[in-house]
View 1 (cartoon, rainbow, N blue to C red):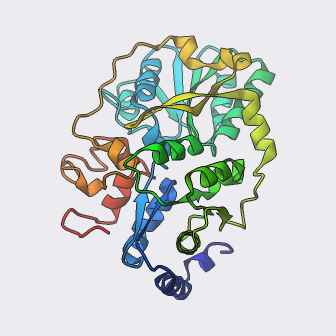
View 2: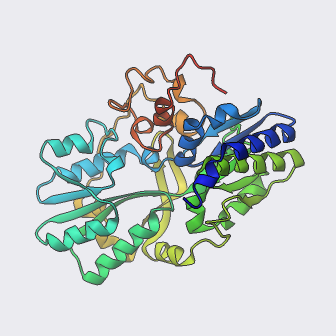
View 3: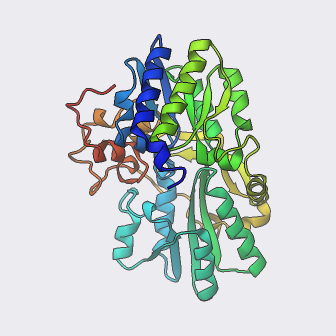
Length: 367
């Protein structure tokens, strides 16, 4: 398959690893900010094949994992109401809330439906005029354009029974918050290629300049990641701090301007809470005032819920790269994909799930 098989070539992977060994003269610490990249790194064992001293730090790149507990509890409070259809992507259904999850709530009779796009939720609203249809809108900049288009479409249709529970987060403010932490060990970033396909990389240039960190826009296949690491190491070795694009087959500096226009029309930047991390200023999106009628949080008044994180879960430390999943006392025992304590173990892009699927144990020496 074009643009897939050739990025999994083992001979080319060995050549990139050899070049990395020749290039790196000192230890370096690089963070990937994408859960999909984390899964490739761990599943393929790339993080363990890198030259000694080059360490990958797994960042807060899983949109399911960073969705705050409050949003999940609000979604379940809305779903439990009579006459409501709550729609969501499937990977949100098993993420633990304070007391339960959406899948368990559906088993008890709530009308919770899995959809593949937010437009599916709009169609459900069209077909069920007597029901209130709510879409759980989460994710980074990658999902924001489709959610914006769904709101615009619902507005054109004049729907009064469609709304969104919005919990969008933005990558650049999270990177800045990590770099502002006095304990931060990150010396370079691999930026998520799909985010940059939408937004471009202009937002990253001030970060690279201000904090003197190389940022390499990177794809998701093994060779993408190896080349991205190599490009970051070359910059570090040469004392450069620029934004470079490894993912040239999909990303341009300006990004997708039509998608950006839709997002700017429907949403505005706001402060946003991140699960396990806390509130970060200007790190999220919320519906603009002219689309407030589609805000499910306002429509159903689900503020004031009391949320409680599981005290055993170290999701915050895992999401910021401060700890590895295997550092958690509950990892693989009291916390598994079938019975997760936190979102990083249940999400398809979670770091804990990646480690568990790859058979990483506490007895294995971590890089």
